[in-house]
Image 1 (cartoon, rainbow over the protein chains, first blue to last red):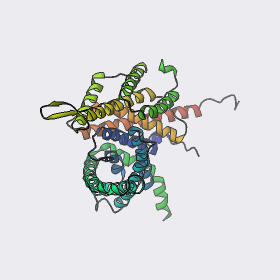
Image 2 (cartoon, rainbow over the protein chains, first blue to last red):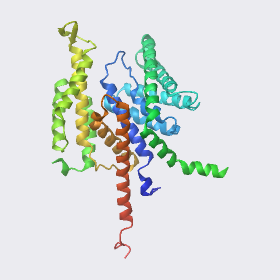
Image 3 (cartoon, rainbow over the protein chains, first blue to last red):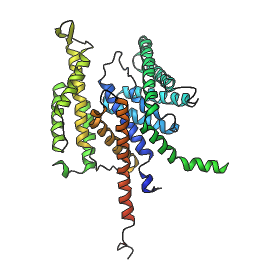
Image 4 (cartoon, rainbow over the protein chains, first blue to last red):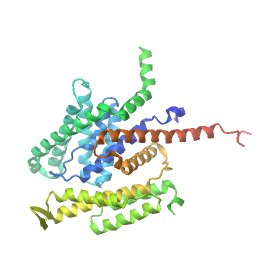
Length: 195
Length: 182
């Protein structure tokens, strides 16, 4: 059960990567908390940046784990862990992550991070408006749907562009990708060996 | 004084404090909490740049005052300062500063939580504290490049912390025979 890694590899663990990415998401959640909101419940989605930048090389289950950590961190910072806002955020984030994973699987040459982010933002906003209609505010919520979706789409484009820009030069990201592929190499080489 | 308390107990103390801190909405109580946690952070040996924190509070408040809400308190030129916006701005600014103080008190470098999830939580809070503490390094001119350098540094530090733990474990494992063997 307790696999002891050699010291040279001990630090390059998935836990270290997830911890750093989750901390960055928490930092962005902090920034977002401070930005005045033009529409209630609206978020720019800066906390999605860490998810976006690892989408190209993280496995889907690890992306989802990071998304969960992001939601928990957001709940902690916004003080919404014990409220329905947390559930909105949870469902919105999971829907967004699933859609982004799906779109990213089409290939990075076909879809940029801007496209992936926009798709994720639209998915998240649709889920949140739907939940709002079904469980909290009733059909009246459809009134806020158009500005919510328009702003969400704009924010998705913006966050995607930021992610694309950062990913284009980030050495930290290159290091994460190298360490991640190193951690998963044994499984991949075994598969190849079996062929 | 706080150095006599174990890192784990401090962490759980901080975690238990957070909900009580975040779930109350009185501005004056929030102010008192922030002053208290700031004092505790100083007792814990952390350096606090009060001017820096005051400038954060001022910046956040100004940002919020831009969006009017509630009764008009004053009017400067054509610009209205409203009660709701002012209160929200000050409250949010104090909340964030207080959270930084709680984090400074609750997370120490020697923090080790049990289990995989505990270790992960410890690492997340350590990384978050480091980012918050060093966010001044991001600057205005090249924030993305500076953020990349900062994250690379933190990642290296996180790895070296793990390597230290692994090396200690290895030294213990290869230590001279104990009485159990003898």
